[in-house]
Image 1 (cartoon, rainbow, N blue to C red):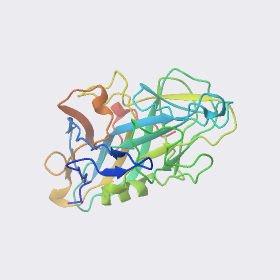
Image 2 (tube, rainbow, N blue to C red; image 1 turned 135 degrees about the vertical axis):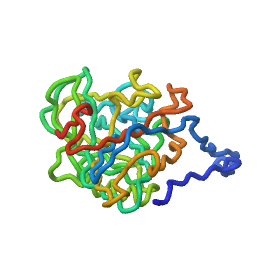
Image 3 (cartoon, one colour; image 1 turned 180 degrees about the vertical axis):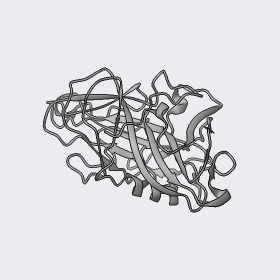
Image 4 (cartoon, one colour; image 1 turned 45 degrees about the vertical axis):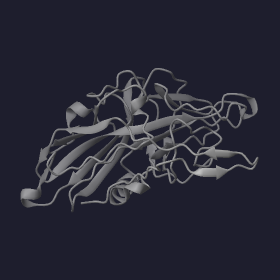
Length: 288
């Protein structure tokens, strides 16, 4: 069994001596009240997994000289990526996906990120770079000024398809993608999973907006159109060629999940599993 992601909860806030000489306490992380659940199973060598986002946020500036750079946009219904004309107002998206613990010797063959493009658009004709995030972030605290990833061009791990129309899934291209490798590393070491950045290094003006995990259509039993990570896996031969509730472990949701902003639980669907020769048609998987 893979090592679980571990969260340490302090019994009391850590005592910090401020520069002013006043004593302050750092907040104590509180475990989420939601319990992750799964649906479906697969019998055979190939299985497909739909993994929901456990947190997301967009960051950016809209005011001259980035006067609003400390504003948080972590619990809104949509996610924006744009390049407005007010420098340095680079607006971009952070998203982290929930990862279950899969049986030993399970091999990740393919991985794709899908975001659902909604109706608020000034379309851009190029894809958006997708980059692995290397540090932790809190959707209720992250903003333009404190975000973990540098502004500007970054070495991309995948590319989200260009705008075509609203109310459609957009996906990462199969070619030139490191997502499968990154997902393998996250499964081996869950503490390394800090999600992905949908970046915006362009100098052109555009706006693309995607459905957030806080959209009203997201319920405890329906993952709907929120951001998703889709992976195709190869299972061991023989009787072990099965994936389902008996051999998939669901770790707790991270304490900083924003799903409990509007969902009351106690259970929340985070994983869907299917089998077959191809991706399930009902999932409407997007590869661009």
